[in-house]
Image (cartoon, rainbow, N blue to C red; front, side):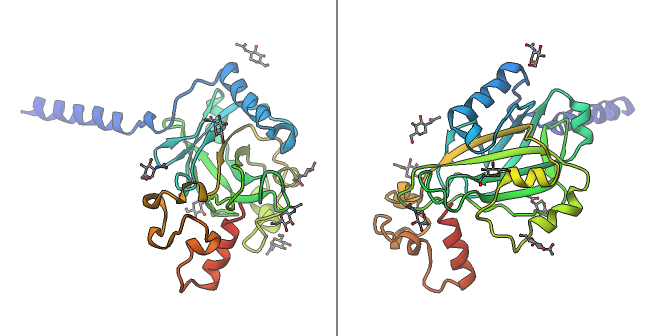
Length: 262
Ligand SMILES: *[C@@H]1O[C@H](CO)[C@@H](O)[C@H](O)[C@H]1NC(C)=O
Ligand SMILES: *[C@@H]1O[C@H](CO)[C@@H](O)[C@H](O)[C@H]1NC(C)=O
Ligand SMILES: *[C@@H]1O[C@H](CO)[C@@H](O)[C@H](O)[C@H]1NC(C)=O
Ligand SMILES: *[C@@H]1O[C@H](CO)[C@@H](O)[C@H](O)[C@H]1NC(C)=O
Ligand SMILES: *[C@@H]1O[C@H](CO)[C@@H](O)[C@H](O)[C@H]1NC(C)=O
Ligand SMILES: *[C@@H]1O[C@H](CO)[C@@H](O)[C@H](O)[C@H]1NC(C)=O
Ligand SMILES: *[C@@H]1O[C@H](CO)[C@@H](O)[C@H](O)[C@H]1NC(C)=O
């Protein structure tokens, strides 16, 4: 009896150990020179280097996952697919250093309001520090409040797809005390410059990153079943008002206005 009980306990421990190691959460690409160079090549091809950041020599692979969609560099995603905050993960060779570090993640749009007219760029879609890496799952999870909470991509009707960059930095000493004086709730999300900020905070160059492309919802709005308000959507021609119920509050209206720029 005692033997049976302990062997049951043993198999329970084994199986819960297996469950506690959800390596399936993120793709387990090996960090090789080839996989790193694939990412930097994609950044160069998309003109992100040197157009948005001067150099990018990644030493880690950043995983970004929207619901069930794992972003590969340069992937095309719809507004709907990127409407909720993604989860982040990281693959690195130097697991000891990564386990003891904190990280900063930024999501920016350099193509607002359009790739041809970058008057509002960069638009800050997410900025936060205090990300910790879990070596067993590969997940990057934040422990502190965002400097900028996630703002879903919403490029304006008629725009070509925007590039959305997700960049990871090793958090510098003094970041948490200094950053809120540079970026906080009253800092406009437009006219942002991630390079200037990383210089000011001593973050150096991003060590990992990825990007995706998202075009305006108008591209999908003819598809009534995919629209947020299908009954009042006449072929997506109503621009901002398509998304806004009649009794929309002033605050919601301004959020919608912003999200329709970037
Ligand atoms: C990978 O790249 C680094 C730096 O460029 C180099 O030192 C190293 O030898 C390369 N490793 C392999 C396996 O090619
Ligand atoms: C993304 O869409 C563009 C057209 O807008 C196309 O040229 C490109 O090949 C697509 N990229 C991928 C990775 O499918
Ligand atoms: C660029 O976009 C802004 C904002 O929509 C607009 O005011 C400006 O006229 C545009 N500039 C050009 C050259 O189209
Ligand atoms: C991180 O998590 C907290 C909740 O613990 C949340 O309030 C915060 O805004 C999150 N986001 C970022 C990007 O830091
Ligand atoms: C918030 O950020 C702005 C810069 O956008 C800065 O001028 C201001 O001092 C910051 N506020 C606080 C309380 O640090
Ligand atoms: C951001 O700042 C860097 C210098 O820190 C500058 O070279 C670059 O042109 C700026 N980018 C934008 C979009 O203003
Ligand atoms: C329309 O939306 C449905 C449900 O979201 C989707 O399965 C279908 O592929 C969409 N069709 C087009 C043309 O986008």
